[in-house]
Length: 89
Image (cartoon, rainbow, N blue to C red; front, side, top):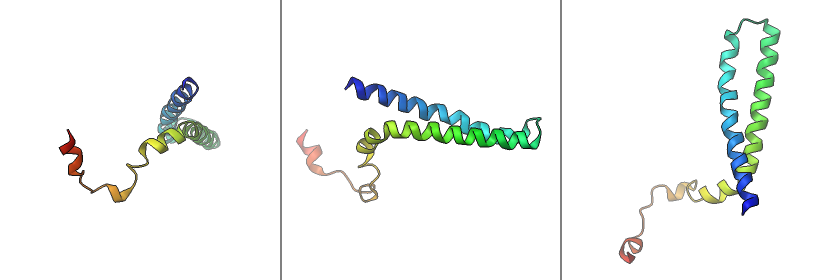
C-alpha cells in the first residue's frame, strides 16, 4: 500500500502543478516580447503542461477509475436509492 500511496500523491501533485501552467498560456500575448518568442514560449508551455498533466493522470488512472467508475455511469445518475438500504439501518 505504501508503494501505491506515493504514486497517488505524486500523480495528484503533477495534475495540480499543470493547472497554473495552463492558466499562464492566455497571458503570453500580453508580454512584451517578439512574436516568435511568444509562439515558442506558448508551444513549450503547452507541451510541458500536457506532459505533466498526463503523467499525473497515468499515475492516478487506475485508482480514480475504479473509485469513480460508478459515478460516471449515466444510467445511475437519476436512480433513487433502494429502500432496503434505509430499512436495514
